[in-house]
Image 1 (cartoon, rainbow, N blue to C red):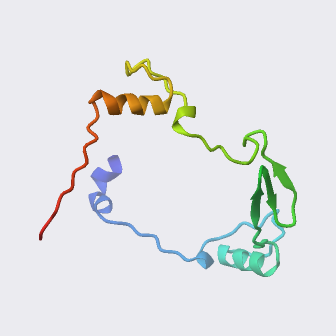
Image 2 (cartoon, rainbow, N blue to C red):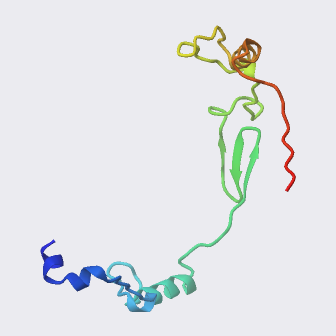
Image 3 (tube, rainbow, N blue to C red):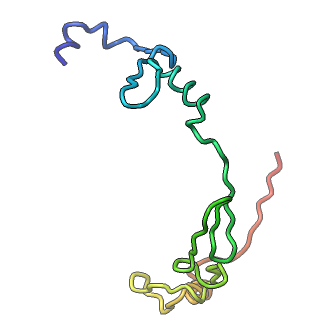
Length: 130
């Protein structure tokens, strides 16, 4: 705040610092790299084979998740048998405390709302002539 009062012109200008990677110093201590700037470090990593850009493929079969040339992970602890969590609305429980509905599952709640007249299920169409 004090600097703004002394040097107001500095605080009313947009300051832009434009650098490229070769202008940014790089401390190579302990890295095993010879580079002294960021651009050189990137190039050294890219050309030295130190960065692995190998793409891997994942596959899911049932509850087994596998990676190409790797090991698999059995997800049966979190995915039900058959590899799906396919449910219908009657299988999803519903907490009716706040709503006052009698339904205890999602399907019954939908049916109760549809037959109660609270939700308007009339279908309408709007034509726009422009």
